[in-house]
Image (spheres, helix red, strand yellow):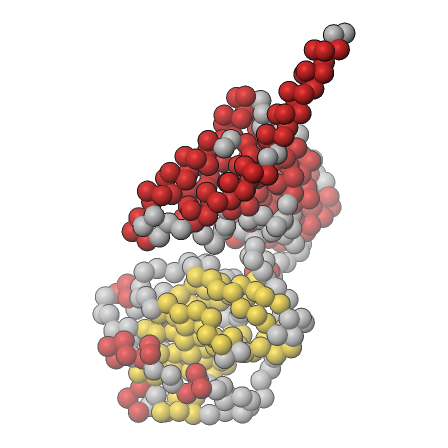
Length: 385
C-alpha cells in the first residue's frame, strides 16, 4: 500500500469533515436565517431575504442543521422560506452522496426540533435508508409531531387490520387499543373506534378528544348591530350560577344546565336555548385538572367567539357564518391543579338568510398533538362564583 497516498487521502477526508462541520459556516447560516426571519407583511424585507436565501443554499450541507433548527411551526412564513432551502441543498448533497443518513436520523429523533423540521428530515432519511420506517415508526405512536404520529398510527391500523384478516381478533383488538392511545386525527380515531365497537369495546370519543360536553348556558343578551361583542355582560364579571340578569329586550335570563350527546361536543344553541338573532349567549364549564399543565383549547364556531380560562381571555374572533369545523381555532392556556372555569361567549348576528340561522360551537381541551387531556367535571354549587 502506498503510505503517502493513504496519508493524503486521510488528510483530504479530514478536511472534508471539517468543512461539513464548520462552526463558522453554521454561524453564518444562523445569521442568514435571521435575515429571512425579518420578512414582514406585504413583502417587506423580501429583497434582503432572497439574497440571504441564495447565500444560505450556497453554504451547502453545513446549513442543513441550522435550517432545521430555524424552522418554526408557529411561523409559517419563515418555514416556507426555509423548507425549499433545505430541499435544494439536500437534493445536491444526495447526488454528490454527501447527505448523511446518520445526521438526518439524529434530527428525526430530536424532539426539541419543530414537528415540520423533523418531518422534512424523516422524508429525506427514508430516501437514503429504506429500513427507517420499520425501525422508527413503532416508537412514534405518542410522538409530539402530528405528522409523524399520524403515519405511525396509520401503520398500526394496517397491522391491526392484517391481524383481523388472519382471524386474530384478540391480537387485532390489543393493537387497536394500543394505537388508540396516541391517535389524534379524527378520521383515524373513527376508524379505530368503529372496529373496536364491532369487537365489543365502546370508545368514548368525546372523552378521547377532550370535548367538553357539560355546560351551563345563559342567553340572550343584546347584540343589535353587533354591539354586544364589546359589552362585558355580567358573566364576564364573575360566574354566579344562581343569579338572574336583565337580558335582551328586558327579558330576565338565568343559567340552565345542558349536556350535549354529540360525538364531537357540538352545542346547538338554537335547540339548547331558543332561536335568537342579534343575541349573545354565554356557556360555562367547570372542570377539575389533576395537575397544572399547559393545554390547547381547540374550538369550532360558526359565529363570533370569545374564550376565557379562569377569568383570563385566551381567544377572540369576530366572524359570522363562514363555516364551522373541528379545531377551527386554537389557543394555548394553563389549567391549574384543581378547579378551572372555562367561559365561552358566542354572538349571533342579525342576518336573515337561511344559511345564517345556525348558532353553535364546540370546544375541546387537549395536548399539543390533539389528544384530550384528563379532566373531570365539577358539579357547581348554586351561587358558586
